[in-house]
Every structure is written in C-alpha cells, then in structure tokens.
Image (spheres, rainbow, N blue to C red):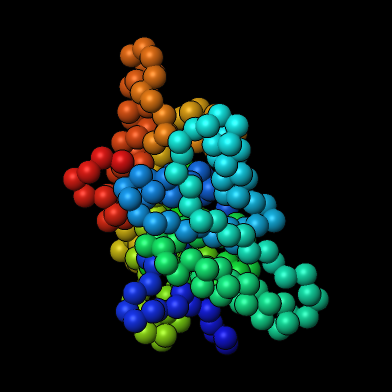
Length: 280
C-alpha cells in the first residue's frame, strides 16, 4: 500500500490495537467494540478508541450517550479517549486518501500514550477500513451464527454445505496482513466470534460450528465465543452503558441474565488474551 499509516512505535512501545471488522451490517460490531473498551478500562488499561465509521457513528453515539449519562446522572463510568475519523469529501482519490491518512495518523499520535486502541471500521470496503485492518494486532470479526452470514468470510455452497473459496473480505484481510509483515509488524491475530446463537436449531448450530472450524484452518482465523441474543445489550445503548457497568439487579432472572452476559464479555476477553484469571 502506497503511504501506509501505521501506529507509531516509540522506542519499542506502542498501543496494542484491537480492530472490529465486518463488511455486513447488524452483526453487533459496535456493541462488541463498546464492551471490549469498557472491559479493558475496568481492568486498568489506558484505552483509546477510534471510530473509522464516523458517518454512521454507532460507536461514537454510544460513547456520547455514556458521556451524557455521566454528566446528567453523576454516574461513575470509565471513558476512553475517543477520536472520530471522517471520510474525506475530496473528489480526487489520491488527495482524499492522503487526507484520510493524515487524519488517522493524527489520531494515532494523540493516542500514543494508551495501552490499547479499539478501532471500529466501516461495514464496507473503503480506504479507511483497509488502513484500520492494516493496524490490527487482533482483528475481531463478529458474525451472526447463520449460513447466510458466513459469506462474510467465505463463498459457501449453502445446499451442499461446501466452501467454494475465500470471500472478498477475507482476501482484503490477507492483503493487509501481508502489508503488515512487509512493514515489520507481526501477522494479524484474526478472531471470529459467533454472535446470537440462542435461536438456532441444534443441528444447524453443529453444522455451522464444523464449517467454521474448517474455515478457520483454511482461511486463517480462530474462533471465540460471542454474545447471545439478549435484550439487555440493546437497552443499554441509550444510556451508553454495558453489562459490565450494571449492578446484578433484583430477582433470580435478572441476576442470572446479567451474570450470563458478563461471562460472555469475560470469555471474549480471555479468547483475545487480555483477561487471565480475573473477572471482567
């Protein structure tokens, strides 16, 4: 890539970048990003966040709701140092890409003192999305647990349950991974998380699991447990809160639901390698 933008390495120290990437909407990407951010903050990490999907702005709006809840309710909620990077409006491709590189480099420089960066990317192929993936130490790709959503990572013959080849998105990840290696960075640790598994028939669930295991070996990712289909994840958005911010609630059902949701977040952080024997 001409003019690649990489997080600066200051005397061998730079933030660890976790990038949320998926070219299909509705997979829970911003929800996952927010819970990873808060999980890391509550573990004591200095966290920066970057929204490369700034026009849609789901992560930015989530954090705006959180800031407002802190100010209006006096809630004690940890916040990251957040930056938005917008797509250039310049009509010329080279000039537009140069402007986007400059904006992203400025965000990286401003967040250089952080331990971790969480970067949310657009749900489509774009210059900014590619730059985001280029900087992924860990790439987290949430997918809904269905055969329909598997085409994010591979071309699938749905009738015969066979893999025909990698998807356009997977090939893009490979390209950015190769560019990282050329620039002296470690390969991307690609994690695919299975979201919203609760409403799937057991047989389909097993078939998807087997197919994903095969895809992981062939395409180069590892699997992580995702988030269940829980109303609570959607309800918390308007307050800018996560399940990690909540008291356990009242009643056996509420306590059980909150604990299960917290375990889901903790299991994801363990899969990434950022949580050991502590609880999120």
